[in-house]
Image 1: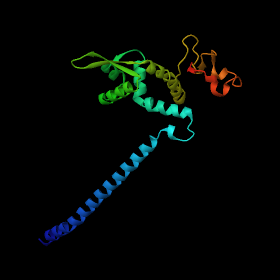
Image 2 (image 1 turned 60 degrees about the vertical axis):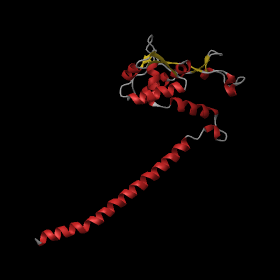
Image 3 (image 1 turned 180 degrees about the horizontal axis):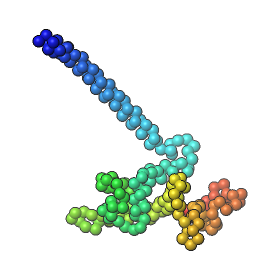
Image 4 (image 1 turned 180 degrees about the vertical axis):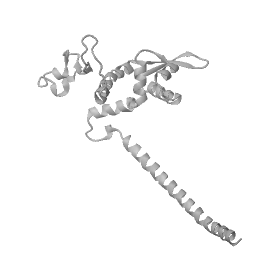
Length: 204
């Protein structure tokens, strides 16, 4: 009928225009995506700029950059906590860290091994299975976990860690083993106070 012919004619006449619009949208999307990828890559490279290369960089910031490069990851901190109780096998860690994918756990363990905070000891060859444990450096790093936990407890209003004997909420202080005092209690006007007297400070 005339109506059918007219509808077919309209449909055919609209097809090229629709194709052009679709192609133009795809072209715009690909250009937009490519520009975003390049921009994100530039941002990543900027964030990777070593602080050491910045003039007058604060020594504390240099140390913090190294610390965040190693431990500035959610799963790394949780693996540290899981290994704090002693050596664990892969399956044990996977069970302790609910929600972590096996490939992510493998990646983090390898990264932590490269950074020298975890050791992997082969306990069976077929199939190859390892038991993981903290190195001395890893145990040293794990000392920050109670500090982070206490900070999170204060932030979200949950119950803080308390002393088993008296029930008082625990606090973390920086301790000088040479002076056998908290840094907050030291006389900062004394000899060498400007640079902490070269003392090694520890968490208490």
